[in-house]
Length: 400
Image (cartoon, rainbow, N blue to C red; front, side, top):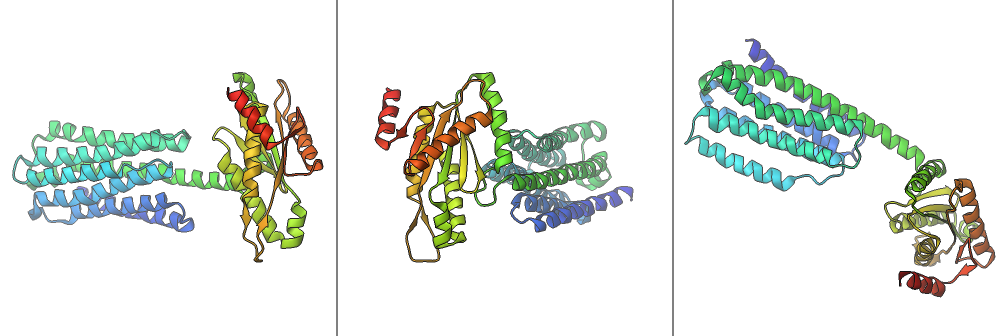
């Protein structure tokens, strides 16, 4: 009687957790992995109901039928945790494992006994699924506390699936389906699954809350038009990167860019066109820089880039590419006119021991010289006007 009550508790717990995740997802439907958590627990809850409510007369078929939603739930869990950390979900491997296990379970009806062909196979299958989820979480570059907690809970879940059948058979000996629900194995299954389901759910819910807080923090620190870091966040990243570069002896350069005649864009075509110009210019910068570089909007139509492991000449090449591509931007305004923009750039290389303020000041001064000289050009802090032909020639000589 006690085991029957506990057996009904598990599906209720799983379905309640599924409902909690569904509510969380309904508040932010962009987070597909949260819906995956909800569907995973709902599927596992269905498996619990099948296992508990099917009459004993179904025999081994009850184990087979409950294995299907269990496996679907585990696969959804693995997909969700992989999606959460932006890792490719092992969908093909999950499908292959499921197909192989299904064939083996069917063959087990005709060959082998209840113990070896059903319980060992189903537990090994579930263990492999959760192991893949743990591996996907461990492979992310972002080793945060929520990720570590999810990894260890998935690893623990996988381990207990491997160990539980052997320990149970050492106590109960061989099992048959008639005595399955009265076995130590079934009691252990209900108890451990209840604990692990709740524990894993608590970790996942905590991770969802941490993700939400992180997104809100990034939203505050990001420029809403471009998605690039706002000035304060950008400067914090730059100062930390400058310390790292000093420790590693890596050269740094800075590029400051500004949209030409931006006030005229607003006055002639309206602020909507001005916002579009800033957004497109920011997205162009984000597409052009490398992963190790840092870019931010530092005010109005002005942007700054810290170029990692790059001297002044290389940064000039980056600025020149941005200048050319800026001229190719076509804004979608309310008029039929072909609205085009241009930009000017200042470039400088970091001097050893120089502060961020000093470095930015030199680069910004180069930008203003570019503005005064006619705009739509690149000027390095160490020299005069950098023409496109000179840039290509100098870069070719440096490469040689």
